[in-house]
Amino acid sequence: MTENSRLIVAIDLTDPERSLELAEELHGEIFAIKINWPLLMVAGVKIIRELSRYGKVICDLKIADIPNTNHLITENVRENNGWGIIAHAFTGSDSLKAVVDSAGNMKVFAVVSMSHPGSDQFINPVSLDLLRMAVSVGAGGVIAPGNDIEMIKRIRKNGGELTIASPGIGVQGGNPADAILNGSDYIIAGRSIYDSENPLEEVRKINRSVNSVLP
Image (cartoon, rainbow, N blue to C red; front, side, top):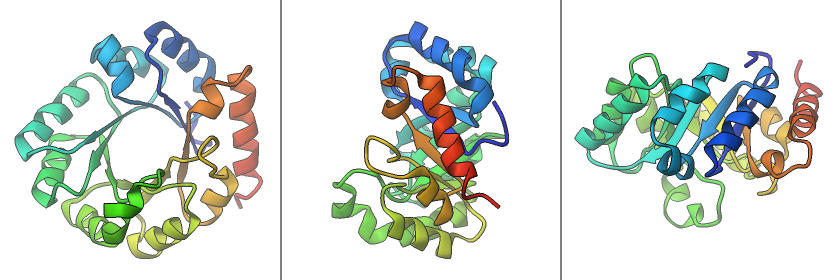
């Protein structure tokens, strides 16, 4: 992993061997790896520890449960070398605070908006409320869509120094440079990388795009 990259690669696969191969191939050019339930359901929680050999692992579990369940999930991720965890904020401050309190040194990202159209129905109308709650309970970052520039701007304007990580890059239409220019700290891309014939070159292409707009 490199601190110079702003790219988090989402490995949303169900093949543990291929996931580890990708991590090994890409780790020198990216900031972190993000994994989701599909891989964990097949490989088990041990895959977090295995991937952590290649650097930072963010577990995108979008936790949305009562505080005790959130605590148990977060503790499990932490004990298996997770670097970061993603939780929904809409379940309320007590549930989100349980994640923050259980995270230890892990970075907690709260979902305040999503990259699919359905986010407009219930989440986006209260995004700023969710953002304020994330700040109040001590979350270190938020998730805001890279394919919705106006939302990124609102979150950046109201979120102070809170870290913004933005999915929706590539297949969902988001442009990495535009997201960074408008307030994202990190961009998240998955399918455009792992479905590419040359994932490493795709990563380098995204890095070049981002670097072109950095000071």
